[in-house]
Amino acid sequence: MHTMSIVRSGFLAAVAALFFAACTAEPTHEEEVNAWHADRIERLSAERGWLKLAGLFWLNDGTHTFGTDTGNDIVLPENSILPFAGSVTVEGNMITLSPAEDGLFMVSGEALHGSLTFPSENPVEAEHGRLAFTFIERGGTIGLRLYDQESYVYTGFTGIERFDVQPQYKVEARLIPHEAPASLPILNVLGQVTDTNSPGVLHFELKGESHTLWALGEENDEQLFLTVADETNRDDTFGGGRFLYVPNPGPNGTVMVDFNKLYNPPCALSEYTTCPLPPPENRLPLRIEAGEKRYHASF
Image 1: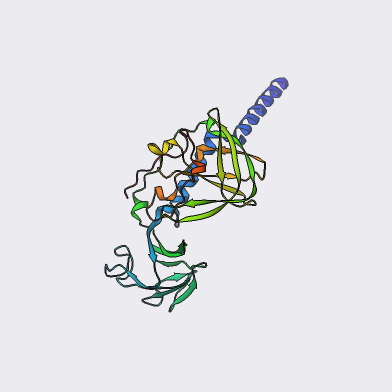
Image 2: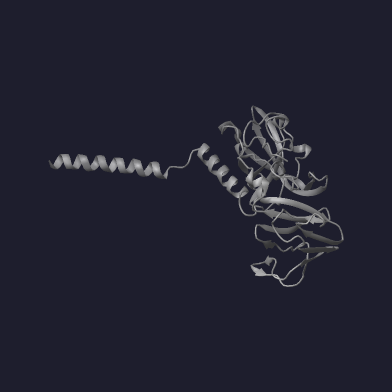
């Protein structure tokens, strides 16, 4: 009896150990990519996610009225705010927000009374009900960026199709630093060009051939940004390329580049964005059938 008890105890201990190991095992590559993508979809749908964008209005110097009435310079969504809700005045890099009524907007958690003036490099965010707006600057031009919790982009979102997760698209790359500080002229969808710093070029092999991608960012950034074009952009993926972040391995360091995490830029989801496009240096002469597929938006 005693012997049987010992055997039974040993068996139960072994089962418990196996169960514990299963519960604490590292996720598989596919599970890790799927979890990453689920988090991305959650961020897209967040209060200030790309799916909540509802407008982008470029502002010249002068005063611009806004509200739901179609006579305003900036027409806001129907039934979202007053017919005339106020005005925005731009003078150089200074912006003045003048609500039509005291308390109509919340700024930093407090009701706004009177007008508020601020520089474009330090914009405020104003909220009213389902709406919020802030200001961006691109190429010296100031824009009012509008968010709407009932945006048609958000309410019509049905998810993003992906290629199956494939291990062959996770490759090791080495970051070769530039001999001297370097930058790339990056064109965006508005036709504007911005010189963007690059700490180096990633060298890797994929499908039996050597390839390179210019990494964008600063030498001490935790992550490096890649804008990537490939031959799937003609049919299966977004025509303006896809984005990817990778950990910064430092000069001559190695990093795993997982093309299963290639994702659509915001301009594939919303017309109210200002995405950078892949430079010629990052146009790969092959099909990368990994990551997100083209999103068939209604705009």
